[in-house]
Length: 463
Image 1 (cartoon, rainbow, N blue to C red):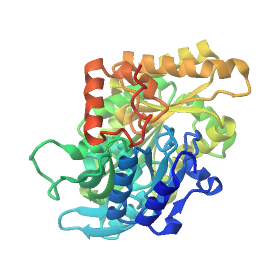
Image 2: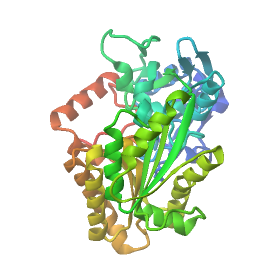
Image 3: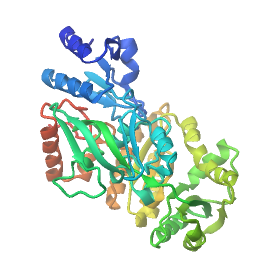
Image 4: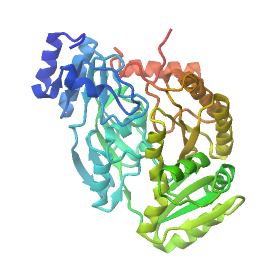
């Protein structure tokens, strides 16, 4: 049971059914890691099933100054749900109820353990959807989406999680129960604590319920693929698309290195000589679809365009997206220890970012593959280093540091949707000035006076 006293464990068991507490290391071990592949074993794992149980657990941990790390399914890549200080892991995966689908008010109320896919299915049954659509939608939970301000391809038009939540119910680190936001789509009363909690990675409060803003399903959608000779040509096309009135619901980009990997590790056929690929989707009323397609294809036209394909059937849509879907599994096969950084730069600086990343790849001797949500300037930079190569192993972290310096020099930021967690906390003071960082620390202390919630995350240790 690590550093937890028998009295504390007994009190924990009294708050929930006994079988909802794990203390045997063999049982709790798997709750010490997430998709960052980092691991710290917790002293205990507790499964809450109600808001009241969460409140009791937080109060108990606060009273005994026991670290408390909240988690969903552990799909995050920044180490946000790894319990660095051991203590108690609070799993919300069993709080998986959708309690209301209100189509009149375009709202869906759900507990944090509901998966993103379950929300989409429930909303779709009534002709709606929830905009955040991370790649892990089938597995990730709403709680995790809230913790990281998750996005996905649709964020370019519909916004990320923060723009699509109306209200929250939560428990602060001091054990106080709070409600934030409103059930209405407009509200201007007091500070916006809803947006503050979203993206706070479980360091301020434990969210137990969310009112999500639903959007009607579009009447029609069209999918396009455009191939370019060079990545700079594709980046210029992205800038043209985002400068005209029709905002696509997805605008994804892959560089030449990504295309080469897809060719060598899948049966997907891509245009010869392509140095970059764009995937574009537009949605809206059927009556306006032809005009929207014309506007987007006009913006795609320019230097380096090799080919534009428009899908005319569901099968062709699947075929066009096959390249993007084949990429991540191929990267995992080639470099299981790869570092994936989801940086963001202004759309106008994407070409400069890709060029700079090429220079860093050559300088550090580490292959770099880039793809991502180009419409937001949110690029996933994959450093494919070989941990068995001593030179690459030694160069990997300095290369990541240089990537962040490049991104910030271009007016960008360290993360678009993966969060800071443990992996980026030691770089955050490059992105935030000391006064702002100090204010954030003080906000943390107001919500979590004993510092029990997800300690060791977001903020670098103070000297």
